[in-house]
Amino acid sequence: MDEDGLLTIGVLARRTGLTVKAIRYYSDTGLVPSTDRTAAGYRRYGAEALARLELVRTLRELGLGLDAVRRVLERQETLARVARAHADAIDLRIRTLCRQRAVLRAVAEHGTDPEETALMHRLLRLSAEERRRLIEEFVDDTFGTADANPELVAVLRAAVPELPEDPGTEQLTAWAELAELTGDQDFRAALRRMAAYQAEQRAEGDTTGLHHELTERVRESVGAALAAGTAPGSPAAAVVVAELTARYAEAFGRPDDAALRGWILRRLEVAADPRVERYWALLSRINGWPAPPELAPVFAWFAAALRAAG
Figure 1 (cartoon, helix red, strand yellow):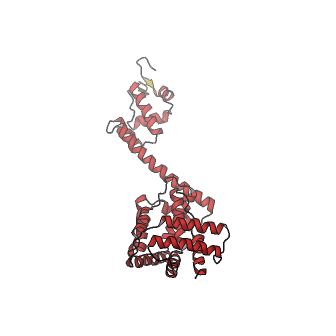
Figure 2 (spheres, rainbow, N blue to C red; figure 1 turned 30 degrees about the horizontal axis):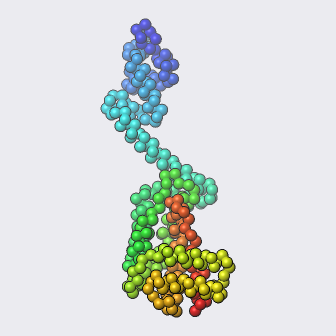
Figure 3 (cartoon, one colour; figure 1 turned 135 degrees about the vertical axis):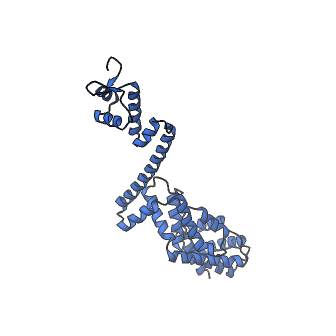
């Protein structure tokens, strides 16, 4: 420091930890102008220059560009506003990096081919709104084309894949498979047949909606029979069928007779598409929900037992 309190560029460099070259550059661009020069032409800086350099260094280390730093120094914008905008930009960059990392991990762990990698990357870039529209279009094309069960349609519309900002490998691969499944035209055709059957039942007066308790009872009773190794055509199976058909008769207000058993069997056959269960399993994995119970073996046994019972 000279006698008049001014600092040479070398002293300023030691005080701030910046290089002489960097300070000279900031000085030349007008960010930190020198106070005066010595007779030999060397620059000298005052206390204000030291404070400005400290701020410049801090903002640059935080990733702000020179234009943003200049606006702050020249009081064209407040530091708070610039910091908020830059923090938002960093958030976006972090989300982008997390998504890129998720794709790379999936490729590394599952050995996906280039086409699958490109698909995952494209799907991962979809916004939450775009994912919602994808599901809405899927529901509109399948259950939205007929007077299907409104409770089921509402559940389908509400169950949107909520992919986190930093998805795990399993979530990412599940999302890719779900997107592929919703685009499967054969699967869509099968769901349209289910919707048409529901519309047919509603036209005949069935407006009972969803039957979670009945489904759970079937799962418990048939699950116990499966665990016990009960054959669908055995007397023990006939007891299970009788108990369940009685519950169906009560739930739907129908006589418990052979016609009811045929009606139940048709319902099971219409719904017997393993892709439906896969759809909900994938959605649960993406959203971090508990895995849904596996119902395909349950309904297959129940259908076989109904056929055996005549």
